[in-house]
Length: 210
Image (cartoon, one colour):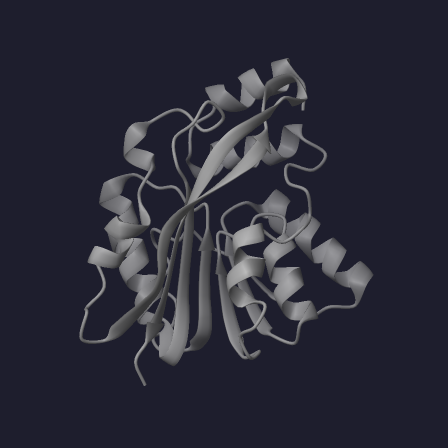
């Protein structure tokens, strides 16, 4: 993505129309690969039913489905879901693609063995109810995985959109959940003009007690 495209993306908001525009102006917004923190945390989990919340162009959903998971992938961008469905067809992989706004759509309670939300950045007033709904969708013995960006030169903007793993963990009932991972992990990301810049992910993985 060139500097002009970066500036155009930075000018957009975080509502459904803005994300549709982001996807529309880019042939592919993401790499198509699974997010590294999902791979790190889910690679050894036994396949079951998975919910990919904010699935975008489907990299995570396709990775999970390719490993034997029965995946429901939810996003409010029709452009992104369309691209994901085309790639699933090319690979011969089945995923249940759901067009929905996670601030208005509630997943069925206790229905999933893994609920994954990768870089689902929402204003604080929306984030806590959405996370509560995602947590409620985890079956006994299942896992909740929430990953976000820590603010950096690459990830700037509205500060209320960012969170820490500790903040997410604090919303979970300690009598019902075991926190398995709650930490920040440094890595690098491609910034404007292709520069590699230091960033960090904040990672929460919790297991609902059986």
